[in-house]
Length: 235
Image (cartoon, rainbow, N blue to C red; front, side):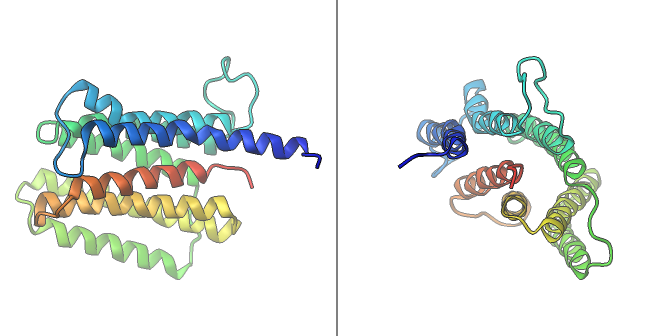
């Protein structure tokens, strides 16, 4: 049976995700976040961020541009801004390995990451009832967490971050409404998982202890970034 050239190319593209899966497995085997947080070392920060580096390469290879070495960032704004969001997410990953002293810088880098995702997704669909649902979800999440936060500056940071991530979620579902494509759906699922991972961090830090919290956070986080990367695929 003859295999078309397009099918061969698609099969090769499926191999692009293998480094992501392998690097995730390496991180979980080496640092075992099932029982405790990983040690606060440079190597732990590197291996924690390594799966995101793999997704950056995946998005770049699927952008469809030629001369990758001459143009590291793709021409498409959607792919370029998504890569920038992944880059700042990887820096936030490295910061959160040092949980106490680098928590605020980690939040700031993740905020920049979400800002890039906003640029990538474009404007939301005004007039949709879903917009109010997402903003109510953001307000409810902030009110749930802020009563347990004593520092006024931290309250402001949490408010800003919550507004950003729920706006990204709203923009991602708007994209799915507009395009009605499989990649757009995967992007929305990815943003939802990313939101879940941040919510678990907030609960574990300010409300109450969650068993296996680091494991649950990382599963949701890696799944979320994978969904965002898959959301850049061309239909």
